[in-house]
Image (cartoon, rainbow, N blue to C red):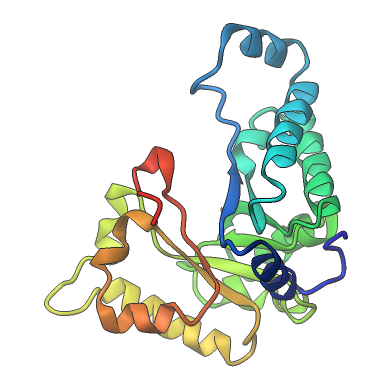
Length: 235
């Protein structure tokens, strides 16, 4: 069943119940890593077809074992129009398999720009969710309000897994200052969009979060990247 016109959280909860897993498939077609010569040749000759084949293979292999799909937009955008069209087709295929789609673009800007990003994500690509960065203030979220009220969801980058982002969560004194300030802003937004917010929390730093803060964050839908290439173990 397609995920179109169904609330993101309801689709994910249904997938979790049926498949007994919380795994999300991350599709990051990084052509600088792990490409065999014949793959490189195909990509250069017909990048759109290459992406169609690659994404189709991954989706067919994972469809019974994951509850959502996250497409890292940058790797598609880097190929220009062919990449963008391939992303659109991959999203359609994933949703046709019943898998909700996260547009992993980590946008964060003033309200007018965020509204345009919302149009890109939800009206053009027809994704179910998107990742955003909150450091431009609450307008980053409120500008997407019309879509959140319709059942879409945003995953807010809260605690990143990249090593140089540690200043966002490392304690200064007894509290991670920036994380606490962002957390308070998100709590205020939650009053208006109680079903529309989730968090990105890097798997590589989960143990470093203060217990009190973790108990609050875990109440939201979580996107926890970092397994595999970034070094976080499964489980």
